[in-house]
Length: 108
Image 1: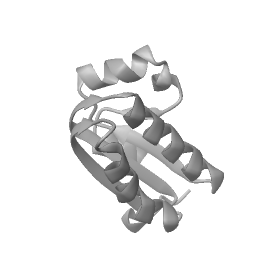
Image 2: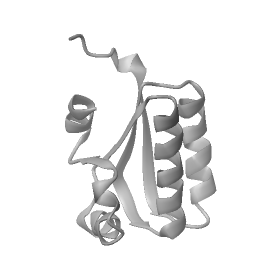
Image 3: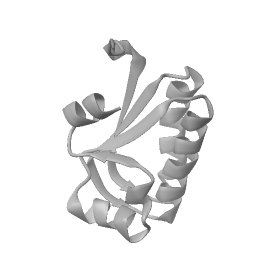
């Protein structure tokens, strides 16, 4: 089975706190990737220090939109403090979470 070319993967790098004020910007950043219906969209969380409920909601909405056209969505590089937020909300069972970009590319 052939692997998708790198151009078929959209990667959005986030940084800082993904909260009520930043979530709309995150959604705007993801919009062009979703509009292209890229087969795989990855979000780099390595520079993210905090995610609140609005940030989680943005990620859930993103996952649903990508799945609606048959695409795959994954995130990578979550710090322990950010990963624990996903785990407390049990969202680590819904999202594909990888340690780094190479693992995310290989795993989606």
